[in-house]
Image (tube, rainbow, N blue to C red; front, side, top):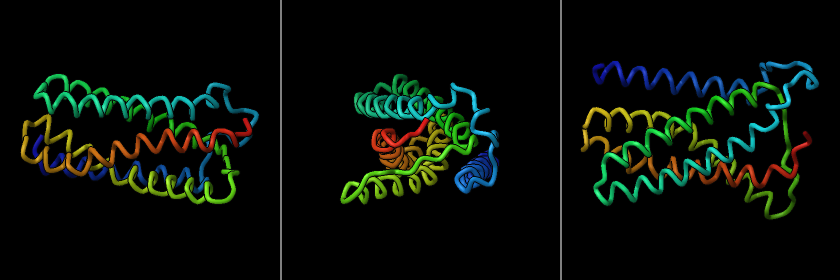
Length: 179
């Protein structure tokens, strides 16, 4: 695969994922028009997503530690595992939001502003991080270390922020779930 094709593929995947998530957030499409027809396992997905995000946070921190120790093999394995888990998260997220289930945050006062700040920054950065992570992975797997390092200066802290805030958002919204 040449760089031009990889860049186009990464761009296409990133745009498609963004569009799908926007459609699901706008509630234009739902898999289950009747809430009673939603399988019971779907209601576990938000908790699973928080577990996946928390696990990815730990993997990313250990990966950073490993690369600082020059353990490239462990670094690579940890990042691949974090990427696979993040991909599973995305599938789980899409399945859950395709059900049409909605939850409104019920906190009041300052905590409400904090929640929405975290949520909005989480959503924006989650959209930005996908192409950055894909480009970082591509560069790393192609052993283009200089380019990989340049990309990771941006993708790593954003990815870490998204995984941490994903857990925070879940913890803050879960008391208001009605299912």
